[in-house]
Image (cartoon, rainbow, N blue to C red; front, side):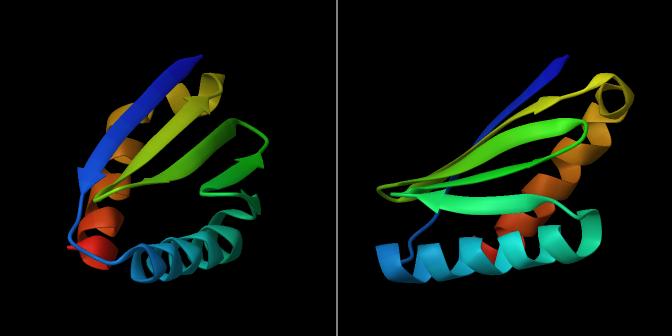
Length: 91
């Protein structure tokens, strides 16, 4: 297993950050067939090969994910895509 742990700063209000992360979750569902659920300020996501969460923090979000064997080989690409989407949605 391989771990991703990314913290991304932003200047959005809590409500706008939550809306942006909800949009990210919708794209994850469409593109990768992940299951998502909110628990307080944490959006959990999982599917075969990945289990993770996006935590809303004051002025930042933190993405943590455990990648299974197959996705571990693509960790760099997955991290780059996460960074790109966070920058696009949160600035």
